[in-house]
Image (cartoon, rainbow, N blue to C red; front, top):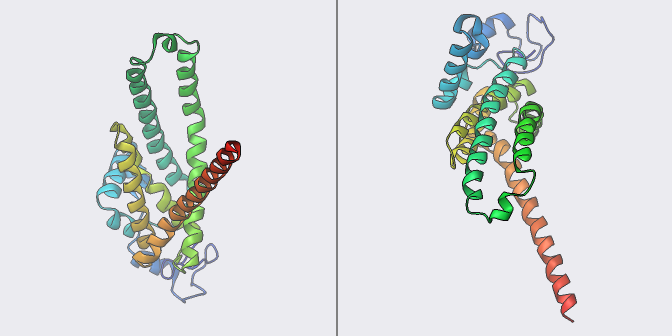
Length: 246
């Protein structure tokens, strides 16, 4: 567990924080942090807790993450991200199938009658249904780990990994925007990234600059690697073409 006052890790059941000396129970009551509506399903209900969490996190992310408890386990955040993510992936797959059908209408008749078209779609849906949950969960841990690592690099990780993981999980809400065809995925990605930056800032009580660095630096680094790889491939192709020309 982590001290509600300073965010440092302390032993489970510890009365006073060994870092700042605050009384843990008093600091918890004064920190203003609380369960998310999704984690308070006993009072809010399953659907009510889901919708209230989705609405508050999407429309008032600063307030949501400022109040969000930075401890309390990872099971509920994972389940929240899993449900929202599955809904989003299902709609993304359905839009792909629908618009693939439109594109197929412009294809030559020989291509339309190729064997395996219907089987591919059926297998594709089965793969989405079976593999998607594992992809979402694994992706959450990887993304949260990267965020926490980069946040630690700039000394912005005032709370523990669990706080970062909870931010990553509850920032999955924009995946619901995949219900919008064409631009839903783009809007979802940008919105989620903004939520991550705000969430890291509020959950770790750090600066916006450090939170932005933790969220954007991995993406910039990834893009740089892709560009370098593409340039190398282009160089190899150009060298190969020049070699065959002689």
